[in-house]
Image (tube, rainbow, N blue to C red; front, top):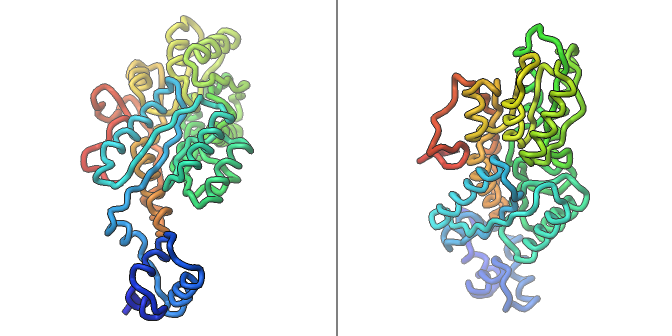
Length: 358
């Protein structure tokens, strides 16, 4: 039979209330008494079921989600999924707050992480920017035993607890395989549109894409990366200029946001060779472009699954229990015009499926 709190109280010669204060790290216990209780716990081999204890006490978990601001359709869909989780808070015993910071701004993200740390939440989920200062801010949170999950873009080298997102190198490799096969025998260079090389997911996608294109489709040179900063107007300008300067472009890989600008530039194009376009994230804009033949394939990640996964992992870390790796693996979906899923209320990636279990 597993030892209980009653056994601890008997072994230490203290009351149950004192044992409870020690287990929950509350004040009001003298140092010598606390030491007696801790020695009794070690001596009798007591193992606390933190998750069960928190459930019994109806513990509420305050979580902070830090997301980039702006009109990036995927990020707004991700935010909508967090708001859907807020709607489920009474049942899930969470108290979720959303903080938005300017996209690709490490200084603003560091400030938001430090402000979150000051509130001592049960966990933080963040769309990361890969910079030394951001890594240090995440590590400060972990130094105070606050769990951290990175969303969409990871932060290698940090002490974060978990990454909720797709394998971005595999995503880039998949995009290259599709591009090469769709181009067939057509010649011509390939342009790449990114948001910013400051974020790890964009760099990893580019690494995977470049590797496969160089290995398997060396006839298609990669042009210098166009960084659209997730700004539709800037993306439209950059893509338009690239198509005008190199009318022989055979393919475009959009590895981040800025797809509205890309689509606008493609619509304005009046001549030149056919262009194969592979993009990321199924939104109302990319869905329409897929249907219109402006985009050939979409690689998508399930924003709802990522948010639900982040919450599960943060709860598990707060409770000190194991994470079920298979449940938290985010898949890469590939959509063509022919296999588009049903569109809910004119939006994709924004509403959870009723009864969905990931």
